[in-house]
Length: 491
Ligand SMILES: Cc1cc2nc3c(=O)[nH]c(=O)nc-3n(C[C@H](O)[C@H](O)[C@H](O)COP(=O)(O)OP(=O)(O)OC[C@H]3O[C@@H](n4cnc5c(N)ncnc54)[C@H](O)[C@@H]3O)c2cc1C
Image (cartoon, rainbow, N blue to C red):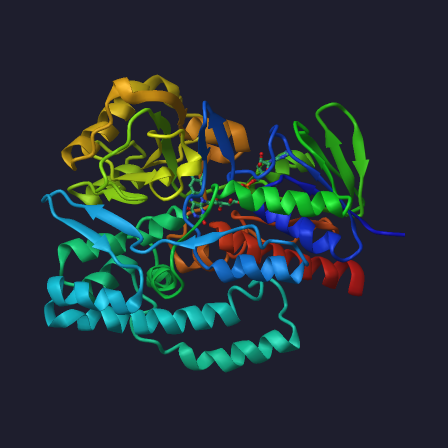
């Protein structure tokens, strides 16, 4: 008889775990509290405008290809488009840099803006390349809280030679400052730890892998929008007979004598299973287990304020697919987010205009615009009461950096606050990436993937190992599945 696997949550981690398991003879059910599948990787469509409501940039496309190939998923119709150049940055001193996202093309930029033709930049990238190599063999391939297999031990021992790496083990911003002199290039570099919701001033220098992997493997978009990834996976799951239930919140994970038995839904229905995998925020699981809440002192990653705007006019051609309007004082901005737990008075604003490269996402002559600013994840905060202030500050920065969005041009609008994120995805404070990675401990020892006391209960997704972001949650599904095989099948 097939073993029954229940996945609570249909984020990319949950969906890709379902792909792996259903390729290997498990009976899989997915239960999602919302009425669409995909979790934060989701879609909003109105009047011919199509928005990705979450991720907008794909890095490490090879991780997606590997998933599809390993699970035999037809994906030829999914067109990943390499965006070159990737991002336009606009600074407070009116300078603009269109940042090339390939290592050779960066050389020309460095000639212009960096002392010593960017020697420090290349040193950082050389370190980051080794860090990436090290992570790919260790951190991405094994779970630090589990006893490693013999193969993993060999890999770890082999990798020890990388440990004396210079520049790799300090503070992120200070390491950047030691190697890069241009204030603009520094600010570009500071932004990378925000890809996982952390502050550059507190993140470890190992996060240099992010600018490296973006430069080495590119930044990508999926034609038709990133939700095509979810549609492709869901089609494959349907073919394999995986049962997906939407509008199906799980209210309890059932267990007896230290062994998982299934789940209870809000309707009172019970679904029995041999293994349960929780894809929601791992730090919240105790509420479903009927256990006291975990004393949680760890700091949460950032949330965001997002405006999805359908414009009935095109934006000027110098606004790119990805444009960043930087604040004038980045440190102050992060102090306000992480120390004062406030929305910054001058936020850095990310503008993502998919219709610049993909006309299918907007009606003709129109523009699909995703505007995002980082915000603190504060549990229970009533953001809806601050709506006019939020847009005033965001729009103020856009205007000062030369991006005008006329109110009269907005024909579609949907706003996401941290409060809406919290409510929709059951993530405390609306923290997009689970816990912040502000120390080596929180970066490397994330909430465990296997429950310590309840056999058969596992975790997958951005709040557990190896962390947030679309490629990482796909890797997380690989690690979770390997653990399930090790503890539920092999033993
Ligand atoms: C605005 C935004 C921008 C982002 N930008 C990028 C980007 O550019 N590039 C990138 O790579 N990543 C980006 N990310 C991060 C990326 O979206 C996430 O890391 C990833 O999609 C998370 O996947 P996950 O598997 O952790 O599941 P999640 O997406 O967190 O989904 C978990 C699901 O579990 C469901 N759930 C929780 N509890 C229950 C319950 N009790 N019963 C039933 N269902 C439950 C939730 O409703 C949710 O649907 C962004 C995210 C956001 C929000």
